[in-house]
View 1 (cartoon, rainbow, N blue to C red):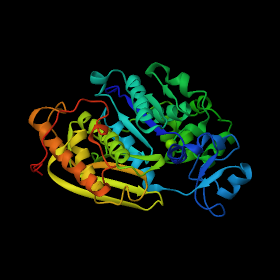
View 2 (cartoon, rainbow, N blue to C red; view 1 turned 180 degrees about the horizontal axis):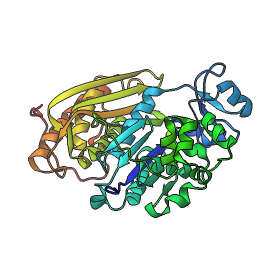
View 3 (cartoon, helix red, strand yellow; view 1 turned 135 degrees about the horizontal axis):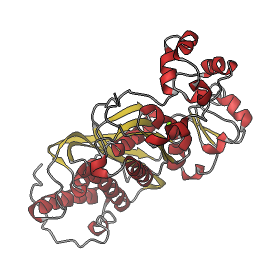
Length: 403
Ligand SMILES: [Mg+2]
């Protein structure tokens, strides 16, 4: 009996680790990049599209990859970094549905059946997600849209790189039949060879095989192969735990030394974080600042507040206080990151810079700026640069900010 027609999106980042490296280090853009550690004993964890033309693939020994593409740059695996970017990406995915199943660090299923009423058709949601990931992280994500997980995943594989493919319910056969049997889940290289030896190379050819024959050949897997070959897949998207933190970070093209520049970049990060919080109706009580210095050593500083924040200025004020507890400025800074944890449902978004609340936040900001100015001297922060171009009311200094 046919149940409700589901709308599933499978999202998969393109060459994820390698793309993050190319984004963090613009000089690597357009260059063949392999992420995989040691040149002698490493295994390719990810490779940029520039290396794929040479036959380089994931899981290949780095040594072999370098024989195929000797000019490739081999980079170490920076898992913590990829996890941070992954958290940003999954937070974006979460804007359109709570029903998200993470398959890996850079890949997941979204059930958007219940989201279409709010956000439009699944295809449109997928397009928006791709655009938002691109705009906010600079990275490409490919998307497959279909009525079940299997079809959505195959669609996103075929959409790569940087593409979107929808399989409408009435075009499943058209999509599926010409594909090689190896596209079916559970059909690895060995199974594919067994099927091909019998002359079943495409899913069209496999369709003609009776269930019993497949079961005799493949055992328990036979029935799944039989069903998937018909585009049937009832497995639901099993939602993961809700997100625990929302953050943003930025590696700078040039190391930052000037306090004004640090404060400005911090505000930009806080605006990104605040926008995400508000979009999800959340506030965060624990603010964490991460600073990576030019020599790649990194520190993080956290503080927990009684009340949750969702405004860029308020978060920036806390982040500036935390910045004052680092050596930023006296040492050049390569990366800044801001994240909020201890998330809870917040009030409806309030316009910033408004009334009492504004004055309270402004006062906290002023104090933090003052502290930085003390640290860095008169050449330090000028408030006008913190809010590029926006008119600033004059606010009396002093008074406890209330935290
Ligand atoms: Mg991927």
